[in-house]
Length: 373
View 1 (cartoon, rainbow, N blue to C red):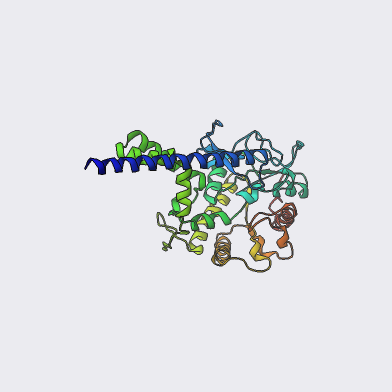
View 2 (cartoon, one colour):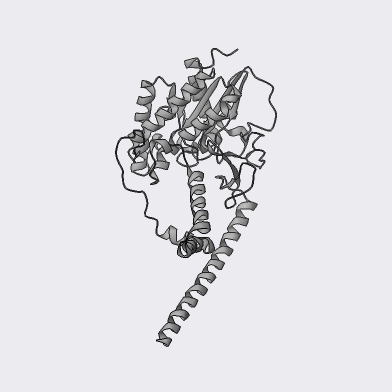
C-alpha cells in the first residue's frame, strides 16, 4: 500500500515538474514573440485592453483599446505610432496636419475595415480620403476594430451625437456575421458585444471563482492562470470549429442562430436605430455594407462567402423596407480589384480610395449633405 502511494506521489511530482518545464519553455517562446512584435509592429495590429484610465488589463498588444461603459470598448486616446495615431477622444486621425473648421461634419463608425487596419498611414483611410473628396467637410474616424452594429449604435447614442454630425456613416456587416458564426450563443439583446466583452466576462468569472469558490473550484480556476501557455496549447489542439446551428427566429430574447438571414435582421434593426438617433439630433444616416474579396473574381472558401452574400441580400431588403439609405460596395465590380485586398475584407490604400469614391457618389446622389449650413 505504502509503495503504491509512493508511486502515485512520485507520478504527481513528475507531472508537476513536466508541466512547469513546459510552461517555462512556452513562456520563453511567448516572450521572444512579444519582443518581435514590439520591435516590428505588424500590419494587422494585435490589441491590448485597458481600463478607461489607460491601465492595461490584458496581454500586450500594439493597438490600445479602452473599456467604455456603453460600447464595451473604444480606442485609447493619444496613441502615436508609425502607422496610426488617435486624438484626444480616441478617434483615428486623418493625417498629421490639423484641419480648419468645416461647414459639414461626418462621423464614420465601423470595425477594423473602417478604422483602416493594415494601412501604413492615417491618410490612407476611408475617412481621410472622403474628407479630401468632399468640399468643406470634416470626416471623423470613430471606427473601432472588432465593433459590431450594436456597439456602434451604443457609441452613437452615448457619445458621438454630441459631435452634432450632419451625417453618420456605418461601414460594417462582416463582423456581425462572422462573430455570430464563431459559435457564441447570443440573443437579439446581446448582438452588440464582441471579442473584448467576452475577454472581460471570462476574467471576471475567473476572479469570482478565485475569491469565493471552494478549494477545488479555486484550484480549477487557478490552474489555467498558473499554466497559462500550456492551457492555450491544449485549448488550441482541442478546437473543433464552429458550433452547430441553433436556428429559430431572432425575436426578443430569442437566440439568433447561425442563419445569415437571421443575423441580417438584427443587423438591419441596429442600422435602423442608428438612423432614428442620427435624425433625432438633426443629422442623417448612411449604411455601407463593406466589400468582400470573393465578390470580385473567383470564389474562395465555401459557406462563408455564400453566407455573407445571403446576409447582404437580406440586410439590403430589410434596410429598403425600413427606408434606411444604404449602399452595398459589393455591387460595384468596376470600382474594385482583387489586388486591392490585403485579405478577405481589409483594403489597401487604393481600395480605401475606391471606397471613398463610391461613398462620395452616394452622398451626392442621395443629397445626404444637401441641407448643411
